[in-house]
Length: 277
Image 1: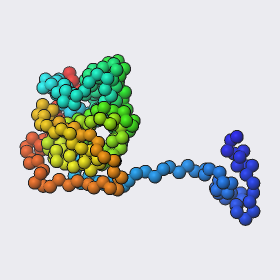
Image 2: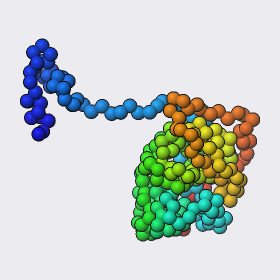
Image 3: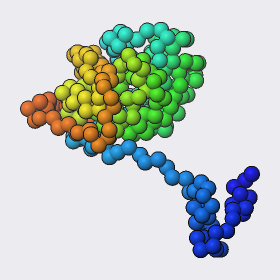
Image 4: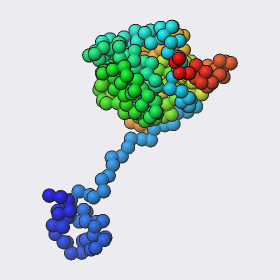
């Protein structure tokens, strides 16, 4: 029976309910039924604010794909990450899909790749590329700045390549991402050893921010061919409550020294990120 019918059938209780317009507002409480206004569950929080600058997203591409392939970047990262046929991998901040396309080939027809980006136009562009390439094992999804919106217990690997420094709310992002890993899953991070304002993340800061949300560092190795270093993390222990998370602050002595190259980092994307000819 529609709710309107059940509401009219509710018995009148003298002295407890008002009439006319006021009764419509209070009716659900008077007849013992469900409230008319659905209350959303309380959102977790508050999460701490990152105690460091956040780099702006300036391009959908970190570097020219041909240049990256010349130094064997993707193949090296996928080998270090132990990507195998049949795996399910998330590519966070996928951009134009440099890793998405190569991961799809690596995991094969029995594997899956979910490519995610928070910029609608970039997501649409990547979806077109996936469709043109007939990559049936790839899905493209729009995420949010503080939530990758990944399904739970779904991924063997989560790739975060040249994008971690652009996450505005890293603690909330990592907290929401954590349930999407399978028990033996790994988060794979590739970034430059630079200050976050210069489009990089110092390894000590990366390790601290991940640890604050319950991730344990597994590997950290230098990787000049990918512009910096390669790191992997796995979950450890229970996921902390948001109010238990403490923001990290990198000691000034551990900050990478700024160089002329770092000063040009903001312009680097605009210089090298030209469309392929």
